Length: 138
Image 1 (cartoon, rainbow, N blue to C red):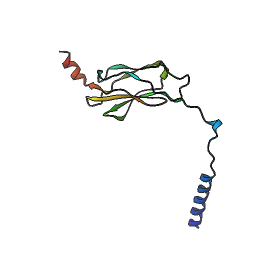
Image 2: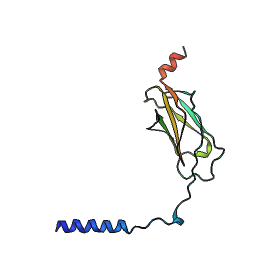
Image 3: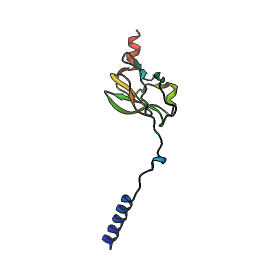
Image 4: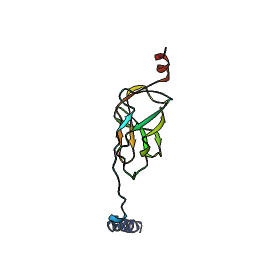
C-alpha cells in the first residue's frame, strides 16, 4: 500500500512537471543590461575601517528602466564576499554612501561590485585598519 501511494505520488509529480508550459513571450519583462563603469574606489583608493565613503559610477548611458534592485557588495582577491555595503538605491543616481566594515582583514586586494542589471567590479583598492590610519598620520 505504501509503495503504491509513493509510486502514484511520484507519477503525479512527473506528469505535472512534463505538462508545465513555459511563460509566453507576452508575459516576460524586457530586461535592460547595463554595466556602468565604477569611478571610485579605484586602484589608488585607501579606505579606513569604520569610515564612510562614496562609491561612484558613470551614469552617462543609463537605460530609462532599471530591471533589478541595486546593491554594492565587497569583494576580496577577486571573490565576492558576504558583505553587502548598500542596497535598495537607484542606480541612475551615480553614487551611494557606504561604511567600510570594521570586521575585515586589512589588505590591498579589495574591490566593490555594483549589482543591478549586471555586476561591475571596481579595480582592487586598499582597506587599512583604523590603527594604521592613526599611525600614518603621525
